[in-house]
Structure formats: structure tokens, C-alpha cells
Length: 96
Image (tube, rainbow, N blue to C red; front, side):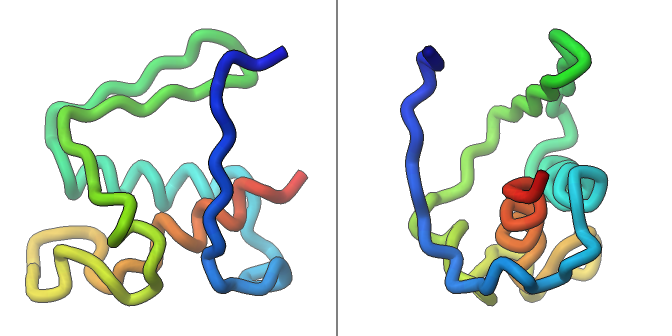
């Protein structure tokens, strides 16, 4: 049994949104957010099935799950700007 507590958030996206996105695209979006948030992030691969991304920066969950809400909208030197990458990436990671 997993020791992790599960949380469920309504992303207000239909499951069929970006239907061709899968594991690669989901991880790509989370990676892009890590690069934007903290240049000193770490990636760990404890096994072939796991990837742990760690950063000292922690986004507000309140803002993280609202489409179009982001802190980088005025930035020209970040990968993301529109507050959708992590949300759509999370959707893609729910697919098997």
C-alpha cells in the first residue's frame, strides 16, 4: 500500500484534450516548469518506473490548478507564460 496521500483536483479539462499527449509530454511540461521556477532543481531516477523532480521553489496550489493563472505572464525569459503547461501535463500523466 502506498504511503503517499492522494489528492484530487478538478482541472476543468476533458480527458480527451490533447489526446496524443502521454508520458513524454507530461514530463516535458513539468520539467519546463521546474526550469522556470528554480535553476537549482534536481532529477532523480530511483528505479525505471520513477522520476522525482525536486526544487526549493513551491508554487501555490491555489494558483497551480487554475487554467490561465500563472506568475510568468509578463516574462519574456521563461519557457512558460500562460499557466497551462502543468495542468495539461498533469492530464497527460493520468493516461496509461
